[in-house]
Image (cartoon, rainbow, N blue to C red):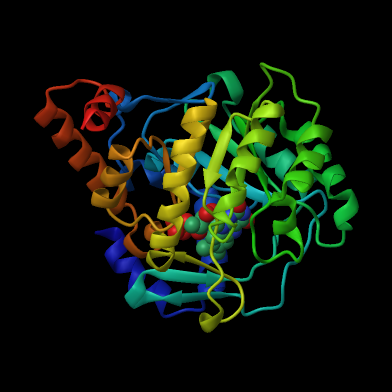
Length: 348
Ligand SMILES: Cc1cc2nc3c(=O)[nH]c(=O)nc-3n(C[C@H](O)[C@H](O)[C@H](O)COP(=O)(O)O)c2cc1C
């Protein structure tokens, strides 16, 4: 209801300006989430992802709250996890504007932001100030990390190591982002050697904070087994797939939303198969815009989901719709927990 009033005004304005304005307002009004979102009694949705439990199977994807200013709002809204960032060691302004475009009819976005963010010191301060953190925090906080544009690729791993060390005590999970199309050379770090260099430098041990690697839908699917093997070798918790896709006919940057769905779906299916074999977690993201698409993903063996673009086009009603239809399905199958529902769906 509220979103239906807000959306026409917001969509009449420049996409990035309205984004920045909204973030600034929501950062001071986190409690608004409570009356706009899904109900508070979602405990039967509890879904174990790594070492944490999501109270709802839908999380917020990275890039909407780049500087972790609105965790309270998205938490109150009912997202099962909130991923902030991408944060880089030093603040950077990103690519020249305009760099965020809407395709309303196709419920899609194109962005060439280039990791604009206020830097790791700012985020550290913000995240440290969250009232409940780590053990007491009900909704997991993911921190998505990336390299500064000026950092040469040969030493990119130093940026990741620096950020991992800085946030591992504060975040519930960390995401190594090597899949944004808007930082030149970044996607090269998805290669076996590139990824190994980064993950090795983190010197992870079993029991460390959960760690995910976020991959691109444009990656050669043949090289996915290499990514999984390296992830396994360095005690990574799981894979997040996918980031935005390049569609040259649309212009520079990464496409998200409905236009991304088919490509991301192919990558996710392969990821589900390989992560299952390897005993790794998988979080599905990329183009989800309805309960029906998510249901199909659950039937394919998927569990946790993240969304970004569909939330921009449909607002909190999308979360409510997913909550409502999932509850109906639980009743239909006569199960009392979401994990049981997944078992039923995956039995066929
Ligand atoms: C404007 C915008 C900025 C984004 N910034 C980031 C980012 O900083 N880091 C990241 O890992 N993903 C980023 N993403 C990608 C999303 O997290 C997500 O993977 C992608 O949009 C696909 O999901 P969707 O179709 O639900 O939007 C961004 C997406 C958009 C639209």
